[in-house]
Image (cartoon, rainbow over all chains, first blue to last red; front, side):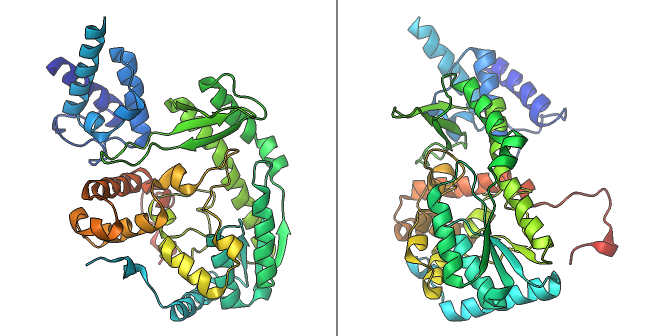
Length: 88
Length: 327
């Protein structure tokens, strides 16, 4: 999970913090409530998750619980990847 | 404490106060001699036109009807009904040729076709948000399309298509604003904006479009209060009973479905409770929702405020120019 978290942190730094360090961004910090991403950013984030991790984010998974912090994003990706592996 | 009566108001003194404010804003602050109101056939613009007529006299109010080829025909009928009721001058301007020339329809349809290749002439379309449930929601728009005589189909929008569709559709609001300001300028009138509090607070307007008014006389009123004042002023029933619609899309679309996610009486109370610092668990019973649902609405209110903050900003400056700063 640390690998996914680090990669997601880098993606967020590059795309939403415009090069500023995201070190101050806690693993559980709400990306929406802290203003790091807005609703347009959510779309960018979903596109990134689907392209980078080979998952498909379903409509009923579009809830803050899954996508609103670096930790929840990483957990969500892991769950989705695990499910995909199990389905093979 | 919260009850459904927190939004009650005494109509006559409220109407007098708003009319006095309109006279001050138009005649003194803006130094214009009348008002242009784009009348949509909905309750908000009917109320604004009525308040302006009360404030300035009907002879100083002009109603504009701004249909385009995708507007509901009902909008023009109801708009004319409002103008007739108030005894104000009015004019219809068909925006279709301008929107065609700007590429509004073509750019939007091209972006929809990237997501749904079969989409074509005669199909209906609209944007929708996911339902506002117990878990809150992320405001990710989907497109809903329907072939002639066929079933609706829904697809989540990728970023580029979403941005293209919204930018093309917003040409409608921006063209309406262009025409409204033109007709105001040629008379030395001001343009009245028609957002209610929900719309204004939640950024339900287009910057440079319906957001570009000179003054917004009902932006402080909850929608429930808009209905109360409209009833007191005698807005025609067919106008006040029409469900709030965006009238922007070819498939029928209410504001609730497009943006707000809840019927306005409940959303008004949620917004009032949130504005007054009342926690979800204390507000829930009066609103008629579970505490978890109210908490989700509070989060959605904040989310929309963050997402639309820039809509409320004027042009930003590197340094203030105090000599001409707004008071």
